[in-house]
Amino acid sequence: MKKLLILGAGTAGTIMANKLSQQLNLNEWHITIVDKDETHYYQPGFLFIPFQIYSRNDVIKPSRDYLPPSVEVIVSGIDIIEADKNRVKLTNNKVLTYDYLIIATGSQINPEETEGLKNGNWYKNIFEFYTLEGACHLQKFLKHWTGGKLVMNIVEMPIKCPVAPLEFLFLADWWFTEKGIRDKVDLTFVTPLPGAFTKPKASKILNSFLDKKNINLVSEFNTGSVDGENNKIISFDGKEIEYDLLVTVPTNMGDPVIERSGLGDELNFVPTNKNTLQSKQHENIFVIGDATDLPSSKAGSVAHFQADVLTENFMRHIEGLPMLEEFDGHANCFIESGFGKGLLIDFNYDVEPLPGKFPLPGIGPFSLLQETKMNHWGKMMFRWVYWNLLLKGSELPIEAQMTMAGKRL
Amino acid sequence: MATKEIAGVQVELDDEGFMTNPEQWNEDIARALAAEEGITELTDKHWEIINFVRKDAKEKGQVPTIRRMNKAGGIATKDLYELFPNGPAKKAAKISGYPKPQGCV
Image (cartoon, rainbow over the protein chains, first blue to last red):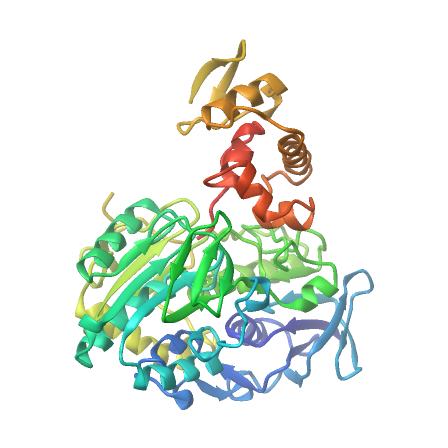
């Protein structure tokens, strides 16, 4: 029996387990997946928790229900990957050997990386919504908040779901309006980027949304430290911004096991071929999702498109054939904009988000870079798609590679 | 792409004035590029960073990020902002004769 080991049962790992268990001959292959958690989190849902749109139970399911019966599931932490010996030591002392390894260990927030961020006011007037715990704490806080200066801060790039901070602000604008206290809340977006987004066309449009919604933008602010006593964030070059409520996206890094195993860069992301998804260091290791160092967005849609490419390439590679499929950096993100509306962006390594219709050129039903009710419903329906189609590796009516059809230059 | 004479050498530049061929770089060009960025004197500390950027970019095939300069080069982030104000990663890359660092999405 040949052994395929998948590390991480998040979005990317779960899709790969499902796809490859359908493709590989299971008389010849044994597939094992390892994760420290028995729970699968619907991470795009965390954003909605602070505003009471979703609750805890809307975003969690048992991981096992989404993995095929033929796959061996081990619930354990991972101690170290010994790539030169083709084996992985788990924290439960088990040692697993493999012929092929797929690393899907994701990325996580590291507030400790910023001086003073995790101070005595952590989860008191400083919150994050990138963990379920953080999102739930923020929900409790917002319920009784009477207003003040809310600062949404991205500490450094890259981050998982780069549009989430914008969505948070758009939803906050809606939520405080509904509560009748919008005039008592000052909303400010503080980002290291030159504008609301990295790509110029989308950035321009999103900047105008911030304007329209009366949200202040402070760009090119590189957060160096947080002064929790005086409620200030301070940039490396000495600029200061005061807050009453700080919502932070702390430094995102790959799993510490990547660092322990000597497989990562400074942020513990694994150097990966940006087209084939093969590890740059080891021929029998592939990397997918947020764990890679690719210059694409860290997002579930990206993991999904990568999974199509990686499945093809993996099947070819084990047959000794060249890996022909190429990942193009394709990402597709709904951007919730508040008041029951949303935007949609579709882009890749080379083509920035453009206006148009999606997925059917000229028809839609979704509109690119435009605020519509339909886009909002797309986002809300996506939770069903995620649990019932996406995780299971089912075909979706969207190609892995981005298409220019329906886009306007 | 355009070429421009800097410190007596014809160098290739992109639209934003970043050198596209690091082989054309020399220390006089660095001084001239620094002056364009408002850095009138390159001190030993500046050179330490420029040398690290050039060595690392050559080895890794990409310009180091601030975090990498800190972790692999032992350069304090605060120093970087003092020595190359307003966007140290970009400025250090420019003065070191390398293209603009790739932003992440």
